[in-house]
Amino acid sequence: MSDTGRQSFTDKVENTLKPESQKSTTESWGDSIKSTADSAASTLQPESEKSTTQKIGDSASSNSNENNDSLLGKAQDALGLGERR
View (cartoon, one colour):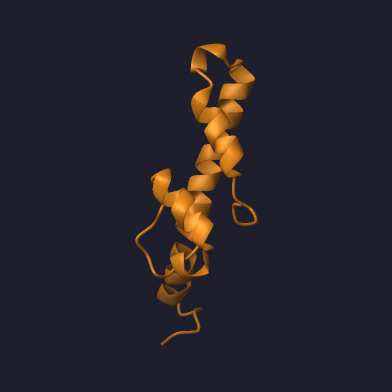
């Protein structure tokens, strides 16, 4: 089961298995948008907050980030808005 706000693993598999030649333009665009949004969510979510199944799913789809902190957290720290010092 994928984490809240992430694309389901079933959807990812279905999108990958269906050839592009069999997809409508709208379906192809939708897949691209969902994939981009899921990749961004993977990058923004710290590894420490991901479920084990989400880590495995991200690793299998090459969506895992190597950060212990999220990009949002790093940006907040850089601006002095983070909790860490």
